[in-house]
Length: 74
Image (tube, rainbow, N blue to C red; front, side, top):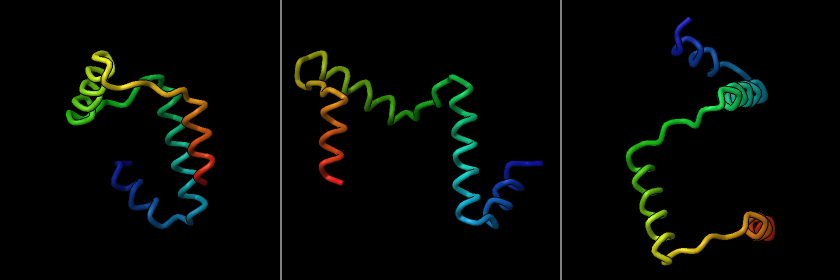
């Protein structure tokens, strides 16, 4: 079976089944243990942010603080 065949069949699924399929696919990617490849613009943005951080122009935020701020907005 080709990827396009799977995609065509996925379009016919119910929303619940589509979400389950997406979850299964993400889980299988995570099990692989490799990070997905970055596009050129994503790598350039990460490089830029690292340069700014190392130069002292940017600061990091604690993950707990970021989560709390996001939760307060919801």
